[in-house]
Image (cartoon, rainbow over all chains, first blue to last red; front, side, top):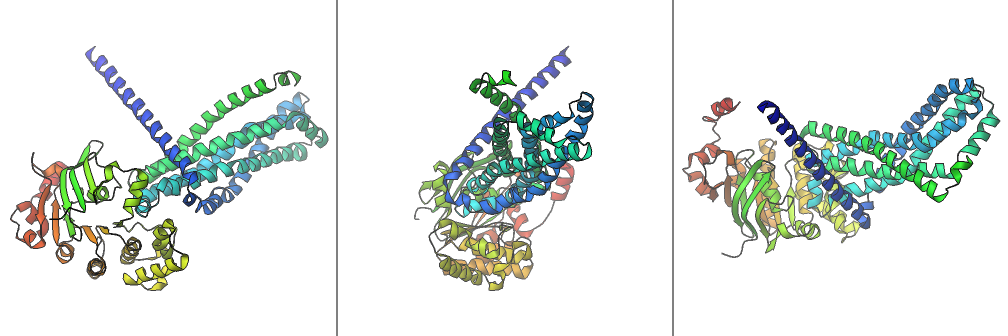
Length: 276
Length: 265
């Protein structure tokens, strides 16, 4: 009996410590985010924006292109059999494109950004931390969070919508390629159904969400890099944690933003859903 | 004696459960060259980072030129840091920038000089540390350890600091390059009225460049109530010091340390 109660006490203490650590970490992350935003007022924060934008945006194009294309193609392959048996093959474009534009495109671009760019950001900043380059910046009269964090934040926030547009385009193209060229769905009806089903609101929500994803990825990854533990292991851990945490945050944010935007739609156009 | 330029008052530094420095009192006068020695892990580098405000002490005050660095805002602290030059242990050159851009970095960040003035100053500093101008376009990865240290010194000197902080400036260098760095520290002191603090393990560096030596001892090895500064005096006094712990360090003898480490393991 005494053993059980001491184990329960140990578990309670462990849980309490973990919750306290999570709250402290969240507070630290919020202060870090505030400093990154404050850096937007400083001219020095824009000095490295161009090369960082190149790394974040241009170098992500191949991977976003390929993944977008294949996601669209896979969706078409998986959905075709069901829709064909129901006699709705010409409506395939609706389900493929709404999935791509509303969800898969933004989330895919965000995951690619977190995986390709975010973890690299964390590893780069962690290496700068352990080789004292971040301390050297502070000694040379530069505030490191402004110099290193703000341009990465700006590049991520501004370029992720463009990557999303690319992922959307490739996904739509991939779906159409399989449906029209492989399964010989009649192209006129395929595109007509898509046109009538996907509206400006769908496109807009698909482009609003990535801005939040980009901000979350940049803040989390820079923060993990800035406060990395020492050694090669510390750098590796910072990169992994940066990706895992930003991936989870992207999915959680996606859920809440989808809820919020759907409610907003219902509030702005209460009759619209009944007309569909 | 005039008021100290740098004054550490009852400084204690703790990282989570690990206490590195305890109740340190240290005054450094303007123009002094102070060598800080001690075993690895006794808090020498932490002390240096406290002096420049890269770390804030858990307890105590760090006074620089009458200002308490622990109470300054980040903006004011950044301004004060520009009065220091810091040569990091691994030089801490920015990998992605050329040697020229590394040395010019601080000057550009200030935004007070034209690019032509910056170029002239960078060339002067690079020549001052004995490097050819051909290194200017190289990346840090293309340089040897000694060259990196000298570029790091040129970068630190570019802003004409009042205080130079050297963190193990000769570690990992061959004996000749070690002496080159020692000569550069002396040359820096001769050319400008700079106060220098040198963290080092090298007794040759201490004897050659310091006019005052401070020895720190690891907290874990101290008896209760003992001060962490084991020795504070001139290099001559250090050589004559009878304390067996000081003698063990300056003579570089393991004595019973190996057995002690084996017991701990």
